[in-house]
Length: 297
Image 1 (cartoon, rainbow, N blue to C red):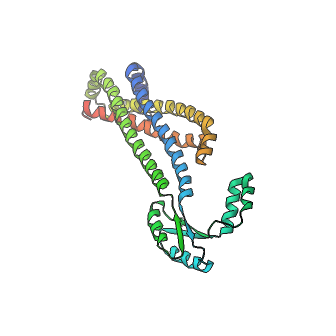
Image 2 (tube, one colour):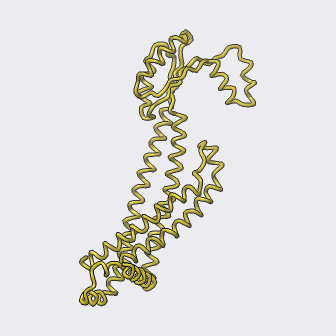
Image 3 (cartoon, rainbow, N blue to C red):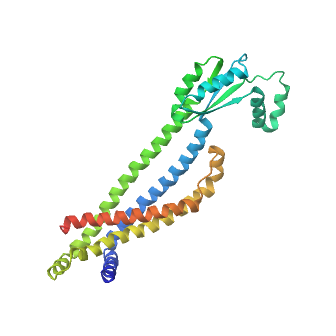
């Protein structure tokens, strides 16, 4: 078993260097695919985190109460809303609390609000949604309640967030599948050259009693070796690019989206296993595809 494995690895190494042109083409193809995959992975993860934070900002509906609506009436309205499965919580916000929050938001300029004779802000109920996609249903229900003056829900912003997230996820999946198919074809052609160059040797090995797996072993190892080499190259390039992006744009991301980039080390630790597994799998599948066509295996 160990001798057979050693033979497969030795022959795979020889063939990788013998077919330098196609080996480099395969390595370049898989590296490019993994590099793009890594960048899409980073973009997708960070956008999903930013989206979740944005959802937390928009997953509430502000229900403004009429001036004559008492606190007891507000409690009744809150209880009726809590009976809906689409609502996870309801918080009463008095006009005094709303003004205090408004002053905190204004910061150093909050003194400008001290000159107001009366507090113009209404009492309100802050309705927390169980699922952001149910916002429209809850919004319509709140509008029809007695004692409610107005309802505010950022439906347009929510729709844009959900649309962008869905587009990015589907687009990334399509690109990745396309690149995987291209990489498998290129690896298959590389191994095909090895098979064609060793046809006579393979026939002799069959005549002397070599098993099918003894013949397949070096070819399978060659594809997996190409995939693993590509994975390590792509991992290094991805690390350099992502670290550079984080250093350049971390502050801007925090200001624009109230969300920082995922830490470089954590991302690379998880991505390394994905790259190695995917690179080896692509190489192995490409080899198997080539062997089935040209070795009747």
